[in-house]
Amino acid sequence: MAILPVLISTYGYSYYLAACLAATHSISSSVLQPVFGWLSDKKGFSIAVSISILMSGCFISMIGLVSEWYLVMILFVALAAIGHASFHPAALSIMSDFSANENRGVMTSYFVVGGNLGFALGPVIAGTVLAVAGFIGVALLMIPACIVALLLRNLSLNRTRQSLASSSQLSFKKELLLLKPIYTLFCASSLRAWVIFGSITFFPLYLVFEGYSVLFATTLVTGMLLAGVVGQMTGGYLSDRYGRKDYLVITTFLVIPFFILFITSTGIVAVIAMFFFGFLLWSTFAFTIAMAHEMMPGNIGLASGLFMGSALGAGGIGVAASGYIADHFGLILSIALFGFLIVLSGFFYVIVPQPWKTISRS
Image (cartoon, rainbow, N blue to C red; front, side):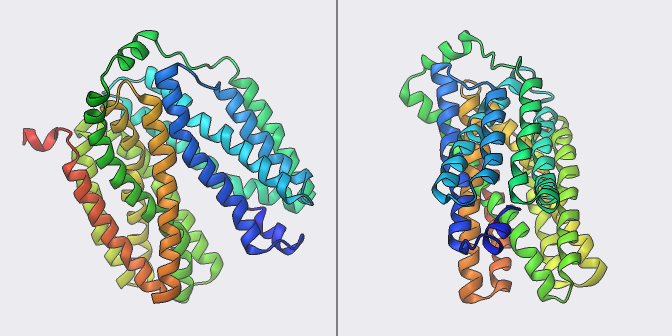
């Protein structure tokens, strides 16, 4: 994302062409992640995580060398997306092998928080490189990619043949029955991803519209994201202890009053409400993947690809719909829609056919 303004301002690319670069990576990765997950589960095929990181990091860095050739940049972005798409199913499958049901939420939150921190730091690092070395300096980012790939070269997907065999022996009808709960969880998670990406995109615009400076507005959103990182770690632990469905449903509906408080108040009250909104909304992200793993024990790779790829991609498409609503009906209405999406996702979580833990004991 950090390179797009440079392509527009320095190299004369249109907004459309710059956006196509980002869309190529997002769409390719979202579509391919479930495919790699299915291949891992059913065929025992996977790309080593070191190779995934090497592909993703090196090809995206090589964009700095081909700024004059747009089609080559598109190709490099697509190849980087293949590396990105092959990483999550393999890495989450490895993580699942080291996790038990009683600590799966915490283990998954470690994985997701690491990715989110990288997501947050990436633009800062890329921006620094651009400022110091110019666009060609982006190629230097392949150095950390190569170092991390070397560190992970001995880490491979070590799924047992027994689990693969037992999975392949399921009848097609039984597999469809097992996937029905996943469809419900997937729909709810896609709605939540819509709100997550929508808040990142439109909250800064809303805050500027309310009279805050651009710098202060983006700083507040960064604070909200950091609150979300803390929320993910907290949510992983509490879901292990008190039950995934219990914490998921209660927390999702608790988001609503803080969202209402944020859009109806000003000053310090709005800021505090915004941070609690981020904390609660993001706290359910990591262990939802753990829920999917528990509901599809023979299809860990597919579950990982669906929830780390397709659900987030669906959320990205939802953000585009929010942009259309904002253009034609106003920014306030577009943001207000997030409240309805949170309520709808909460009802989906309620009907997910998974047992309650603490609530049922009470």
